[in-house]
Image (cartoon, rainbow, N blue to C red; front, top):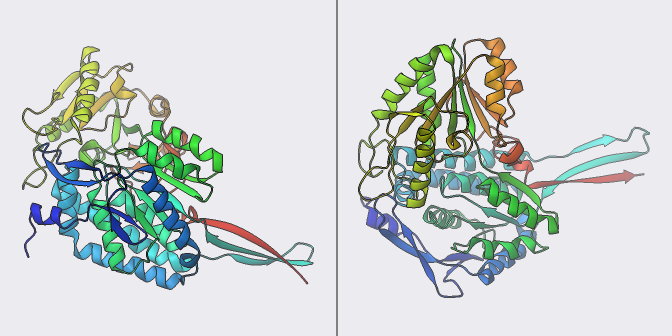
Length: 486
């Protein structure tokens, strides 16, 4: 049967998934899910109460002991089956994601492929969890170390990558043998609800993955986080919210993975290939409409090539087509809400008011939906808010630097430390700059660093812990030491 917007939306269960059962919220209320391209209501979802959240934790706790005993190969096969089924249904998930989040279909397809890869990667890691055996230095005992699942985990996922930020957490948790409660963002809950239904179809047992949707995130989350039965919290979202969650988690000394805000520098040295740098800038800035923590936020270009780079970059940005993501030929979809669009415009007005020049764009797109024109700002002064605050939209502010030391100082001049991008053809400089940048990830001559096989995460106010790579499963494992005397 051909996919339609109506059929895709109607196929998604919109209740709470607790203990293997779909049910309504205990308060009986529901909330609207909107299409950001039109503002229209797509459907409604159950609005969970704190009591529903605790019921989900109860289910996860009940299932933990038996789930931890499931053979690694069996857990691996579930993840592999989920990867294959998600890949088979890529068009369905992509359309669903575009409808609730706004990104163009081409980008949504990319996220489905990226998100599915976490299931495949951790299917392969599930059977490679191991410890070690060694002789104590004095020879009197034997030292045995083993890895065991952390236990019930609370996962809070964001609206900007509604599928991949879920699979990046769920994949290693399943591989390690942890049960979980997942709370997706209320702006984009549908992708997660469809995903948990898929996981049920491939045989993930009842109680292992529970999903609660709510518009009362704080009220629902706090009792779960303060419950002594919870053993881990993983969150992707803003630094401000992350700090509050860390405070709450201290009561139970939870294991934490925090993937927080970013303020990524994009550094272009005079010796760089400018055409490749512009290609990289388009990827680093415009992936996901600029609504990404990894998005290039501050463009620092060496003075001698700044004008040429800005001209080429503005031409590319100005040629992008803005519109509803389900239509063909669309490059840029809407921002997630009117508030988000207005916030982006405030940053642009502040920069222009302080002397920046809009080479292209610079305003919201008239009409329905929350669209903002792709924008390039030149001559941005150091005190402009757009250089210090996360933009989360299609706006690229360009400032200049004099030499390598100046570039590094400006790039590091932020409380954030998620990712930085560097374009240069001097490979001695590559090492120097990569070592000097205070970021958890650095892209060299590339505008994309995200890869399921690589450890994703930041430093400073961008959080701690790593998702993906060999390191990703360690976040869900505890190390136990056993001393053997004989």
